[in-house]
Length: 394
Image 1: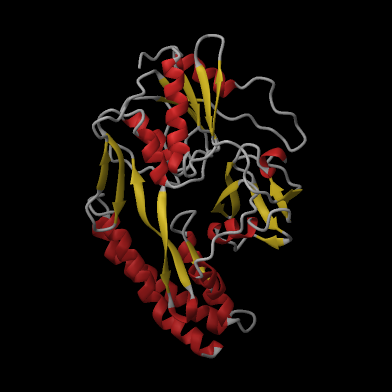
Image 2 (image 1 turned 135 degrees about the vertical axis):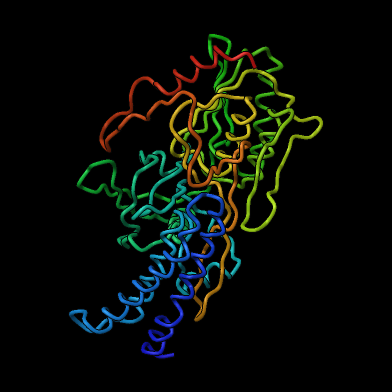
């Protein structure tokens, strides 16, 4: 198909794509009190879209590249959904479809999209962690490739590679005008997902760095052992914990929740899938406090929602990332595709975790640390969590 033909197809078909998307939003927002006006608004938006297309074709200062405009429009549609959904080019779709496992070399980052790629999670002991990368850093470039039009889906794949190979990141932090260039050497993950430290006051701190396969069992064994030894209570540190399947977070929650709803999975136009505690669950009964941050995402968020929603633990720290959902590939013409969120997880009270995050009972902000600054000598967030733990009886 020629560029001119593709452009004509774009002009003719995109309003229907937009209309379908608007229809989806109407279904999702039914009962919200504003859906009655939405059909007319949808028609208005489509008319504006038609006007924009006509103006671009007839009046832009130079002849447009139809392919570039089409890619940009589709990317913009996807960007308006959530940080994990994305429009994929034909090359990206081919990568998604080939079924090949990601390279073993990793730098320890989980990213989402917010204008650039945004760092969500940083795994303890990883190359990224040792280099000082933090949640809410922005990756402006990967190996000199700008990330302005790079999806989270593709960004995660650009960060992976063979162990021993390097990747160069151009990083922005806070209000810093000058980017910081960081070169990382990919490696196979080495750090343990669950570690524990006993405190002199009789409590313990358990750090969970990942919800990769096996974490639920390791967490249950670790905390059950502390309970058996008479530890008074545990702070579970989930800060910047963002990787691993949600199923692992649900399995981990079963060790702590004796009765009630553990997780709710919701798809469009389908009954909600509720996961509840089974007989034999909730064998760990000691007081628990969860330490969370803007980097607590995915499986860690569902785990935190299960414990806090069943009054099994208090949350201390920052609002969580709000990235508890599942994506899948929807194929489009000419090999392109949409990496689209099709299911999201809700807290036990029915409120969405995805897009909103969980709000701590005790809010504490992470310290601002510059690239060349030493971290604070004391961990204020942890101190607040330990203080909160002393008030819990279960």
